Amino acid sequence: MSNKIGLFAGSFDPITKGHVDLIERASKLFDSLYVGVFYNLEKKSFFSIEAKEKMVIDALSHLENVNIVTSHDELAVEVARKLGVTTFVRGLRNGQDLEYERNLNFFNYELAPELDTIFLMSKPNYQHISSSRIRELIAFEQDISKYVPEIVVKELKKQDEKNKK
Image (cartoon, rainbow, N blue to C red; front, side, top):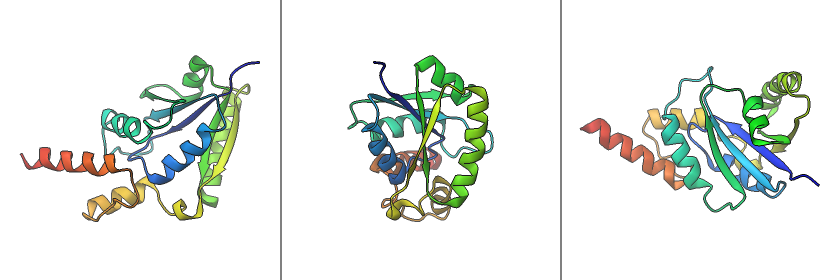
């Protein structure tokens, strides 16, 4: 019997408590779960891919069967094949996410029909949290600590200190 290997991919700019909850839940469904920190052409990144990777590693360090991968120039299906992934894991907060994911799933299936996709619904207390809303709060210098892992707040302070120099 082959191992069940999942891939939860995103831009994680920044990682939120909603992401962490979904990944914790997904990790229980797979023998091994990869979390892919991917570059998204449609988004202007707030954090560097290195900073995002660091934050994701820290936020998920308590999960033994979770490994972090990064990719800047490959499609998720290409990375999934290289890693032996059997299933994509995607999170849904609302109908808008469903429409986006439905379109993405179409192309993933066209490119890699051997890979399945499962969708996990966000818990109600996380359904309004998105990385884009967090970036907006950051821009207006608001406290984001109840929405993100502690490492994100630390990384922001570090960036602020660099920018003041």
